[in-house]
Image 1 (cartoon, rainbow, N blue to C red):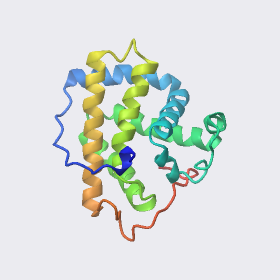
Image 2 (image 1 turned 90 degrees about the vertical axis):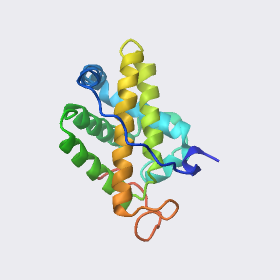
Image 3 (image 1 turned 60 degrees about the vertical axis):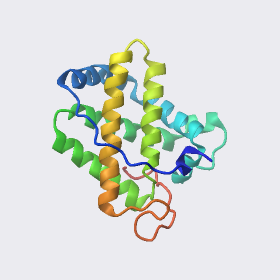
Length: 189
């Protein structure tokens, strides 16, 4: 069974980031974001490689099996840029809990209601982000930075999970009718 089929465990309230951790995240991200398209594509390709079932949410490229075709896909690049832009917005507003909560609520609602994405995929995606950042930027993402990013992404997962809970999401049934819908990569998400 893949990780998406695992039972979702109750997540503990994450520990807030210290000012030092916030600065470390902003500093590392400033350097990573200079290569946002490349890093974003790497994140999505790793997500699909680690968790092939995640591709089913993307109607524009879910049937692509050739890795090179997928990597060169305009739609994949567009969605990768949206992911990177969302992370950038979070990092830019890392000291503004209300703004971060607003962004995550918008992302969570869209993915729950419109795309029917199970919340476990955000946890998987956060793990992939950590892997890619650590591999692509080992000189930046050393132990202290990795710990700060881990903490940030735990907060992101917790807040997204709270959005799903608020919407009445139930594992295996989703939101509302529970019908499978696919991610339209031409719209913003």
